[in-house]
Amino acid sequence: MRRTRSGPSIRQFLKHYLLVLLAEKGHTRAQMVEQIKQRSGGNRDFRASGMLWPAGAEINTVLASLAADGLVTPPKRGHRWRITDSGRRALAAQAEGEEGTNGKERAAEKLIELLGPGSADTHVLDVGTGQGFLALKLAERGFRVTGIDSACFEYSKDSLDKAREQAGEQAGHVEFRQADVREFDESEGGLDYVVSSQAVHCMADQSGCVKAIHRLLKPGGRFVCIDYLVGPLGFLRHGFHCFLAMSREEWVEVLLEHGFTDVRMYELEDFLVVECQKP
Ligand SMILES: C[S@@+](CC[C@H](N)C(=O)[O-])C[C@H]1O[C@@H](n2cnc3c(N)ncnc32)[C@H](O)[C@@H]1O
Image (tube, rainbow, N blue to C red; front, side, top):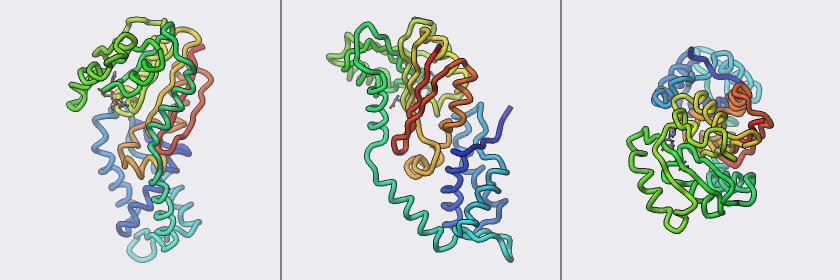
């Protein structure tokens, strides 16, 4: 069943997004809803199991709060909402936040810090490894790493070959396999860590993948994941694509549902690092 999305992160995202829409031109509420549906439509293939657009009630709440802050004006004649000068200034101020450092690299540094010192006895699985962005960094730090990728997109068909090429001197510590995490059963229940970078947002069955990750970890093992932040900075840098990622609230819901505990999150600019444990 498709669900509309709601919660504080979705509202944060909408606060920015509705200003972006109204900065283009005045819109009725119905036109805004239609724009959101259309622009999120391109994401549907990547997020088959989850509704892409926010609940109508959230749109009302956000419009009311933007109006209360003087950033938009409610419809008078013609039923169109409009952005105010303060709204344009707020949007410009948010855009300044775009000039940051590399959020993904900063998130990877945080993930490495959370894993602690590397050891060849510590087995890490990198899910959706692509060209080995995380797997290679972790192998360099001395972990034993397996990188898997389902190669489910045109762009990811030759990623694993590129990862193997890059492995070079790390080759003893890292191996790459083509596999969908939901069907991967090697090392089941024996992994110390499962990690993932910028991949869960494009998994068609996000809940099924989180369930599989839980199954693969040993008791006490941890899942540490980097993905887009659903919020203004995620939107500024990645547009509607960031909306494919799970919001902070959705992460908590899915992780607890599949038996994880001790959920912690860290925001690094446009990326979110999520850490949790299998009891
Ligand atoms: C955007 S790439 C990220 C690659 C790399 N981790 C990085 O940070 O650059 C996401 C990858 O996830 C892979 N993927 C998607 N669904 C998957 C699944 N169910 N199991 C394993 N890999 C999957 C895709 O094939 C793609 O290569």
